[in-house]
Image (cartoon, rainbow, N blue to C red):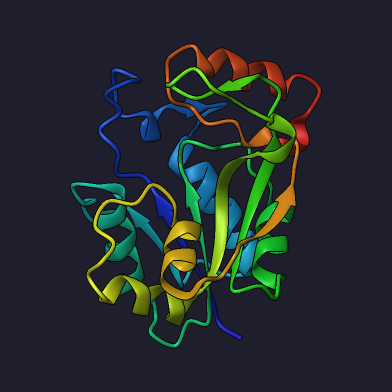
Length: 201
């Protein structure tokens, strides 16, 4: 089985007020930290595409993912999609996704806050997850789904797989290390998690 990885590092960082993928964490840019872990998980860096670093990213997340898919070896069987903005992902988490047998796999966390709809109605948070990345997919199914042209601006590939094939993602509950750097304040959150957790570097 041939594995591949896409590192999404092409965002403009409007909410961060800068290109966060280049932010250094303990002396290494976020994109490089995630890319290096992906190389360890795959056992090589030969089938890793860093969208936004190796070449410009697309106008949307979907465009960037499609660019990444087209740049991978067409013999790839399984692809993991990770974000530079989640630098504390571990090699073990990436490996677990790659060996998972489900055609669509994703990390999730139970919600801790009350969820309310915009119309004022409430949702039982125990019935919901927060969907995270990295995620992993059957490479050819994901490529074929995007080739239909039906999915132009998706925030998550598990939804593409569900909409196209009816495939529900295999959810894997995880801890708080997959926090995303979105705002400048998130850097302090990352540093706080790292206290006493050098294994996350």
